[in-house]
Length: 112
Length: 114
Image (cartoon, rainbow over all chains, first blue to last red; front, side):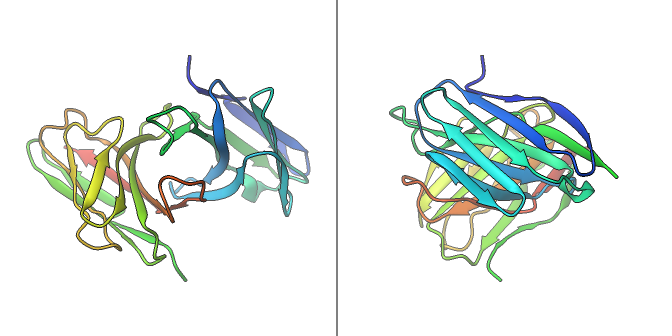
């Protein structure tokens, strides 16, 4: 079982819809990252969370440390939001607390 | 604007040849990382460097080598010993490898072995 699981793997939405992408992890963490990868391949960091909730524009990220779960929400989705969204965690396990463990990503397609 | 520059964007290599991927940052970050991305898999860490002249193996270091002679530069060499080098390679940096900082990523290099 992967340490970081994302769902769904693929998501298609109509413009304007509210979107939720989920991330579950199985290890203790010090931080969780949400990243966005566009078709060209470059990655942009969206959020880094250790507790609670963060908001930036139409994007909202939440984390529940007790349940080992995070969600990324996109309000009023737009075709330009189409990308792969990647969840990554920084484990607190000894010997691996310097690195990120990545989920496989969620491919979001927003149709006009 | 500060950022990470990876070059080239596309690279073709013949089997048995070594090839070097460039990664340069002007963010004054201490830590730099190389990741490999394969279809259907999460990014995997190849090497990371916390300071100049020091670097550590990640999860999949076999067949790769790196150097960190300058703070700004962290080139990755894919050697002929890497059995399956065709992949997308991403370079990243942040202020410190051992504390929680956000990451900046490059735009990647797609390597194809022909």
